Image (tube, rainbow, N blue to C red; front, side, top):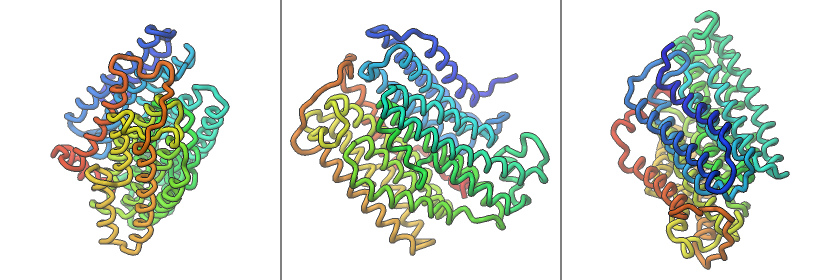
Length: 489
């Protein structure tokens, strides 16, 4: 059986996970070797992602490459590599024993392979399995420290997302049942390409019910309100490096599954329009998070609530619909992945330096550690929607598209943007400006040659990429995003 390139992108991290699970981790210099292997596997995955970008689109068994998924695969590979590099410099400070270190590194690569499969899958059943594997790997990473708070956060993550994945499974089954009278039994009933082609001949009532279950189910994993409460706890209690992949990759994979479902249901003129539901969930998440941001005292929880806000914004854009708004939603997802992971790298480094992740304990970072502090200041400004980053462009495009089609929604949208932006700028001032707080560095953090460069360089790299995506995106990538927006509808 021929192993197609998309499958190789999936199996390479999973093979790396087996190696990392079997390697003795130990401590000291010996403990650096598995972290270096983790970086090597992530780097090889990025090379494969770049290669597949140049391949022709098409279906390869249960996988499919198209304009919608390839930009997310590429950005996911970039974030996977930078997260592995950050982890290489900070894993000693996590104070893992041998078993926990094996579990952490292996779960990271299991997660990466699963999120590649979720993005590349043409089969909706395989996509469901991939997102569930990614979730279980994430739960393990959140719980790996074994503290009471970490275990509680992992259980909340597992229970709430377990409810969500059960609802998503039921929605997937309903889609299959809707297509069965048209395409018969077997794989075509779960193929995204086949379902889009025959959706106009399926039962609209079953399609509508399926979309409701899929939206609520996968929306739980995407951090959409009201089943969002697992996200702040998971990102506050797990090891510092995994925050970048939780907010930057897992949330995207879940919302990506909703977009696949939207394209199917939207192809039937008699089915329930997906737009109003997406707008409602998006606005609820945006407004809830915008006001909650003002009450956060923990830097990691602040960024987690910001993730809820931004996933709500992207969902709102897809609810408005049309090429312009859908393009804004895709840009927002990609820009949020880059900027949020940059912010988590900077906050994680600051937490190791200051010995605390409380905002009050991380003051004056731009004075005490200028390279890191100004990077965090720019990341927070980007999350607030300030230029010249991608999130400014996507939010501006959302406002324009909303004004053109549903101007009455400008009031709640504008309120959410202003309240959230104000909270993030205020937090940025408290974290980065003013008098610096004393350093209480964690033992083993950034002990490698280069020190803080292991956090500063990935943070600055993500910020540069987020700015280039807004100001000078390569023509090929821009064309992919426009084609992907038309696929979403």
